[in-house]
Amino acid sequence: MTQILIVDDHSDIRRLLAITLGKEYELLEAEDGVSALEIIRRNHPKIVLLDVMMPGEMDGLQVLEAIKANPLNADILVAMITARGQAADSDDARRRGADAYFIKPFSPLQVVAWVREKLK
Image 1: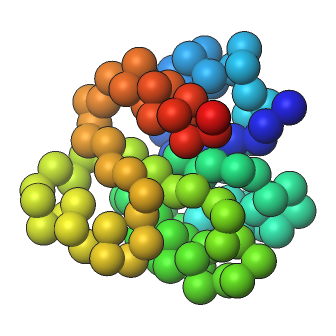
Image 2 (image 1 turned 45 degrees about the horizontal axis):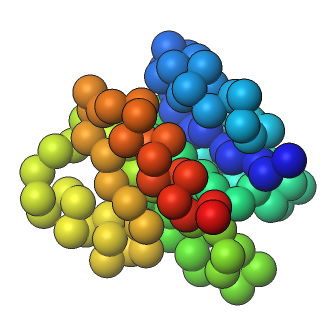
Image 3 (image 1 turned 30 degrees about the horizontal axis):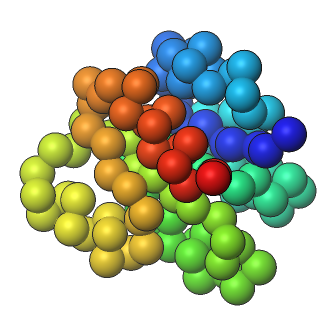
């Protein structure tokens, strides 16, 4: 089963995405950037759904850069899911390698549609 990693420090966001995606995909979860990178190293998920603003050593943009900088992760798609809704924020994330950008509050159905499209 295809693995998707959900990275968000808010358990309610992880739960919402898990409810929406859990029947079709194997879900992995992390609540901070360091844990996310370890899960990626161990499991190599196809998609990472990544919050931008997280506590700890790394925010989501730093995690995004770390994922995209590693040639072993070239096939991993990363969608940012964030409260940062300015065009400049989205542009910055895309310049750093984000494959999609969803603004909170987001529609879980939009995320599911994007995931399904990318995993065809």
